[in-house]
Length: 125
Image (cartoon, rainbow, N blue to C red):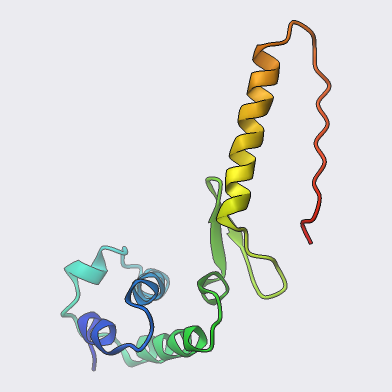
């Protein structure tokens, strides 16, 4: 049996990616918080979990995005379910949402009339 420390030390994938994937797996399979990556790094892990880890590791080695491997992606304070049939939200899109919100607030604040705002969403796939 292997430990968290073992898996993280021998993985061929990027260490940050490995921590994200393994943290997700520990949370989903064992109900452990992500802090277990440090607090329980010497505990022996069950074989079924190690098999799941190998599948995630292989997927990442094949270039699959982390969001597809774990099935979720955070966006503007919400968690979205994602899979290969869905586009993964990009950080730039989150920035555009922030800028749009600020512009709308500015328009509302500096107007003495009721505004009819129209939003056009282009190029979202």
